[in-house]
Length: 71
Image (cartoon, rainbow, N blue to C red; front, side):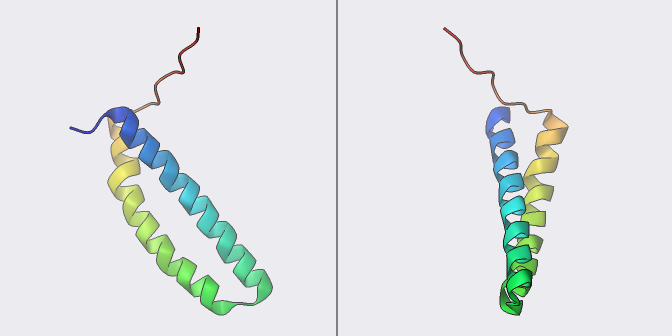
């Protein structure tokens, strides 16, 4: 079974990818490059599937990152 912390790590990475995709879409819109906007829409659908698969599982498992070790 996958460790809870690994699931949370994946969920955090998915959130980061989603944010970057939204930034790319906004930049594409500002530059008037329609193909960028439309491809990000497609990417967003795939990101949403990852969210449903991983992020929801992380929330259900209440997976939290392990605290950093201090010396």
